[in-house]
Length: 131
Picture 1 (cartoon, one colour):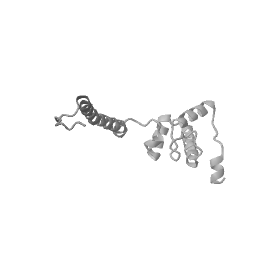
Picture 2 (spheres, helix red, strand yellow):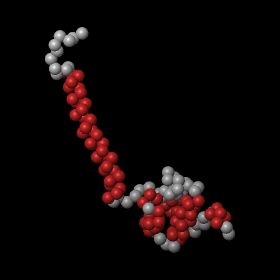
Picture 3 (tube, helix red, strand yellow):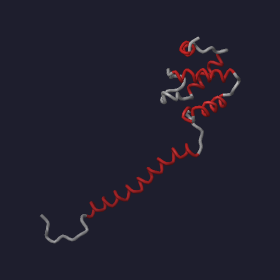
Picture 4 (tube, helix red, strand yellow):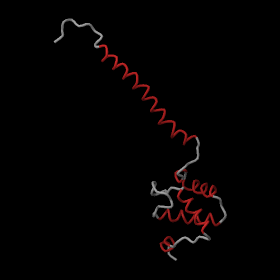
């Protein structure tokens, strides 16, 4: 069988439970080529290969966690829609929040100072230059 024929061959599930588990698992995984599609939805060749590998690992008796771990080792954390919480993923959430707080800390005093100037008028005395 050629590579293209093998890639196009339908997946064979042992039973409905295995098929349901497969669909649930592949919906939780990201296609590494398409990036914004789940493994279940992608038509990319690599997604077809990944789906075959997922089914093969399932049929070897591996748990969903073991399959996810295998995919992460091979493709990186990007393959997971819900990556594990660690120092790098926490930084992805804290850095933008910190930058937003810093920007607010700079903007609020500037806005208050400008508003005070508008409310009280100029601070220098006028010398008859009123037009």
